[in-house]
Amino acid sequence: MNNNEINYLTNGSKQNRLKSKDMKIVVIGSSGLIGSKVVSKLKTLGHEVLAASRRTGVNALIGEGLSEALKGADKVVDVADSPSFEGNAVMEFFKTSGQIFLQQKKKLA
Image (cartoon, rainbow, N blue to C red; front, side, top):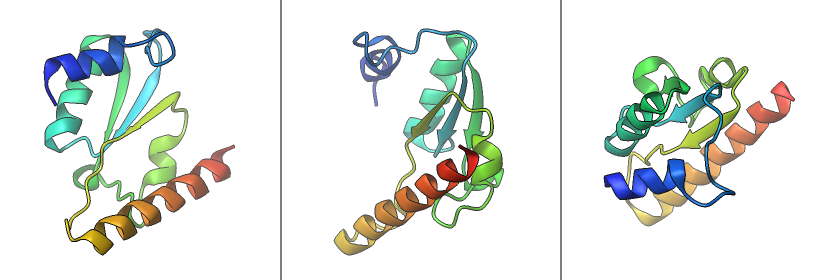
């Protein structure tokens, strides 16, 4: 992801713009190439950022640490990557992590 793409995410259309400087934003997959850049950019913009990854105790695939990470979050950016690039494994990763994410969100609602 280049700076123009990151700028679009943070300064893009009015519907996608992250306006408030007081938002808590959780970045899932924050230790990866894209996630680390997103975290850096959001911090530069003055947001409170929680860097969530397996390295920080958040595993989106099994839900470990996810509910704690999401508490009080205003926005979530998910840039987690599948550990395998094989077609079925990739689809299973995103289906499973998406379902777990939605379950955790319902628990917090």
